[in-house]
Image (cartoon, rainbow, N blue to C red):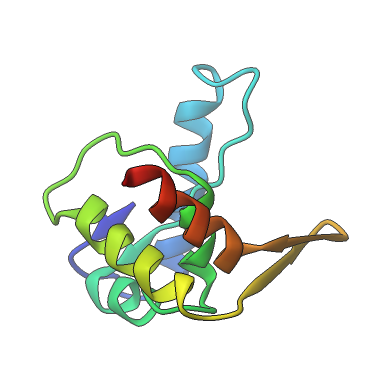
Length: 107
């Protein structure tokens, strides 16, 4: 979730927890990661190797006023030129290879 501005980390945490609780009943079978960013933090994290690099593996837009799919498309193109590996729960996921495959499938 992207908001215009966050006052502090406490506000960020409260929003993330509140949204996760609200979505819990609608997503009983799928885990949901809720991340709240302000516009500045979003811009900082739309670069290869940052925490949002994982968006290349999939995401769902529930509501968008900032053009997130275009931002992610630019991130995918940048990741395809890099060598970024995400390690999550002991598994290695080559994000850059995933980005290159995604670009090939779009053609």
